[in-house]
Length: 145
Image 1 (cartoon, rainbow, N blue to C red):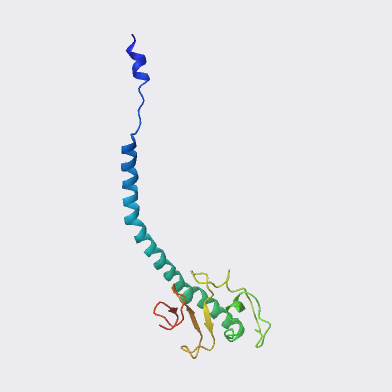
Image 2 (cartoon, rainbow, N blue to C red; image 1 turned 135 degrees about the horizontal axis):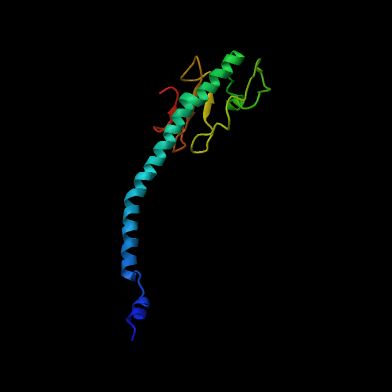
């Protein structure tokens, strides 16, 4: 009898118990990591909204004012940064679009805009209702706080 052939037919692999242990380890690691990542995701959205309010959209509004001598009215809203408003007061030197896309916060809701502002009476109020979507709540992101 040739032992060389016998060793070739030996199959190697994982037992069911070994596979179950690997699955349990992966599940335990996931249970520890996923909650931390989900909190980071929400914090990242808040950071994006703050950047939009304090930098991106505010820069577009400043450029609009530089071109036209005033900010868009509350009625014209942030849409005036994308398309030339036809309502009065019509912009004199609209040179847009001033934004690349719709001004939506990370929760896919339009940013709030008022001009003149209730909090910034010489400028404008720009805000997101934050994760809870409720106005005047603790998680609102604004340009006046």
